[in-house]
Length: 109
Image (cartoon, rainbow, N blue to C red; front, side, top):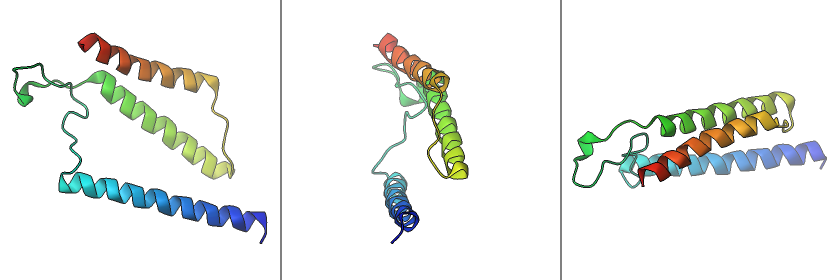
């Protein structure tokens, strides 16, 4: 077996495992075992109703920016056929995005 076939088989197996994990998670979300309440909204203060929760810009930014960067590098890696190097500037931006989320969580406490 040549290395190219081994890498292709490995990619197929890893892709299948990831798809199975994604299916299980989506199934649990569908059945209600995993709740998405409060995913993009701040948890209301004690004594307030769930309807009074506000949208969280830091959570939304962190979610969208992470998916955009991950999708971009996945696409570039697929086109190149190998993993591409992540520039330090992108890592810094991901750190800033994650930092704003952490800071917003600590300020609330």
